[in-house]
Structures are given as C-alpha cells and as structure tokens.
Length: 400
Image (cartoon, rainbow, N blue to C red):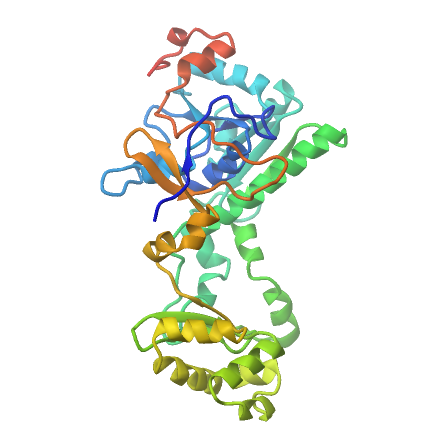
C-alpha cells in the first residue's frame, strides 16, 4: 500500500504560528502535548540536555522511530542547564515564549531556580504546563509517576483483561498519550483566556493520574450507588451485550457490538436465532448483559463456522456493527487508511519516506502543517540563540 507523501515546508504556516513553546519535558506526555501544538504551527523548541531527550533512545532495530514521529515540526536546542551561560540563554527564551512545558518530579523546577512564580515574574503572560505522575500536591506528589504506575493505580488495569487472569497494562504509553491530549486542550484554553483578557499567564497542573482516571467514566458513581466493583470481562462488556471479539473458521477475529436494541435484533436474525429476540433472558440490554455467556455462545458458534471475509460481508450487509481485529500490518494494507490519509509518508533523510500518523484532527479552515522533520540534537542552536541575541559560542556545548 502506498501512502500520500508529506513534504516538509519550513515556510508553511498554521493557526498557532504566533505561539512559541519551550518544551523541557522528556519522553511521552510532554512530547505528545507539544506535538499537538507543533502540528498546527506553533514554534516548539525542545530544550534538551547534552544527552538529549531519552525518547531518542527508544529505538527499534537501531532506529529512533519514536523520535522521528513525536519530534516532527519541532526545533532542538541543546543546553546544559547546569552552566550559568546556558541558564541565561534559557531565561532569554522564557522572555520570548508563550508556553513552558516541564515534567520534572515536583520540586525539581524550583531547585533549578525556575519556580513558576519566577517564570511568571519574568514573563507574566507565560503559560506554564507542569506534567507529573500524581500532580504537584497531595500525598503522592513526590513519587515518580511513570505511565505504567498510573495505569495501575487509576483503576484502568484492573478493568483490563480476563477475570481468571492478572490485570493487563496497556502495551503502549496510554496514560501519557491521554495526558498529552488533555494538556494540549488546556494550553489552548489558557491561550484563549489570555487573548480574551480574562487571564494572563497561569500554571497548568497536569497529572497523568487524573486524565487516566477520567477514562473510567461513571465507575465511581456506580460503585457509590451500587457498592459493586466491576470485574474484568476480557473483550466483552459489563455495559452492553452483544459485544466481544469472535473467532472465525480461518483463525481471524472479528469485533462486534450490538449495544442498541435494533442492532442486537439484526444480529440475532443474522445468526439464525430470531427466537432470542422475544426470550426474556435477552429482551433488553440489561438482560443480555446478565446472560452474556449465552449470547456469546450463540454468536460465537455462528462465527466459528464461517471464514472472516464471509462473516464480515454478511454482517455488514445486514447493518450489524462489526469490524476486523487488525494488527499494524493489516491497518497499513487497508485502503481506507491510505485513501483517507490516516497514515501518510513523511519525507525522511534516512529512509526516503517514513509512514506515520497524519495530523489530527483535520480542520477545513486552519489545517495542520508539515514544517520540519524531527531535529537532530541541538540542530537549531545557532539560529535560535542568535534569534535571542546570544552568541552560540558563549553557551557551553551550544553548537552541534
């Protein structure tokens, strides 16, 4: 499958072109947040230590593919902030910035002499985004807070997997991704408030825990009212039935959801069990959830006798909500992902082009822009330092 090529144009302008972001964060949440801003034109400057953002070291077969994806549309300045000259340069950048992102353990920024009140004293319009595992306050504020721990403590892992096996952590940086999206939204709201004159600069206290906990939806209310703790249900649901993944005769899985009465009725008709519609055990969604094992047995038996392509076509033709369970190779081979440009081929010096997710969301009037490939460490030292009137040689380790 070939993907639409995206060529980088440093002259491209997006809706956030007037916004300058200093990103001192490391790894995923901060990079996800700043990527959202960078993709829509913000001038995101990665302030990196001499060893670089650790995300550069997340490699697959020796290639920094995480960095190539999450470093796009950003510039890099390498500053050893233990050196006075580098700290002076950072303060000059702070004076020019709209947003300052950090994810040090709470208290570290203060020890560095960069407490939010000092940043806001130097630049009263600055939006300071503080990312941490558990927030800047509370009994756990001092604890290191990687996404893995948050995914466990939020209650998310306890809801994931099968009831007879251990809780399952997500196999990717889910807590960081969700926090990054929340953080980008909060940053835009703060900038909007500043533009409207209702606020100037402010501090955004963004924990990984709270966005991850929000994914559980009404479970706190459910527990308070019913006293129950929802149990793991594998790929089924405690809320709707039928809903599961089903194995077909060719060894492939299809995912199906019949959470509305009309769709559930269609599914029972398709599998040749119309009598289930009038059966009091399956009459309502609550009844079907209560008798989920019987529902899954009936539907599973139907899928087990059919090839996945046939089952998919039959279900879709009847208006059932069903889809294949893809791995990444399947997604990359699907014409919808290519034609809708969910995946695009970004130009790359090492590979020619490199497939990656397109800019999200797509906007008709102010679309995102492809300005810069992921930078080498310190690639933009000279140009950025000269923009703020600092001679690169004056900053130890300044030019790379």
